Length: 186
View: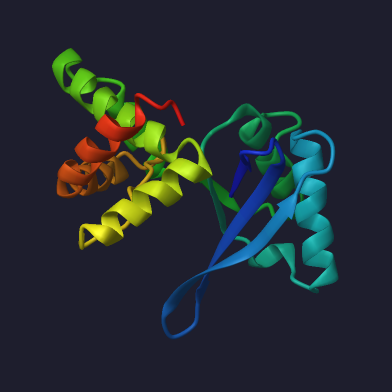
């Protein structure tokens, strides 16, 4: 379960479920916007209304994996506390992806500096739709294997490697684009 804010400032609740029948399956159960505040009570209310509407028993909830944010795990008003009130056998765990994000905070200054330069370059090229379209057109004209750069997420630090790999693969295209377009300030 995660609560996140998209680029437009809209708070969204994401709730994935693992079902165990013959095989384990992971599916997106809920993707709902949070209309007002992102408190534990409001998040629980969205979850509860959804489960009631779909006639899913809280007793089927055996574990909730979260990022450990206060609104989620708070001892008095957190979502986990509220869930445990209706599903006492439910446990909770901390998502490993957030531990990976913490690991990136300990990069050496030299590696961090190199990564930051690469990510600034990608951000520049992805910052405006026009830049992205022009870069794609350049890549198509040059017959590149890829037509766009990737963005990384702060949570999944392994995605940074994919971003840098793609940046390296498109290094000639990026070099040409930056030489042509940093002067014109798109």
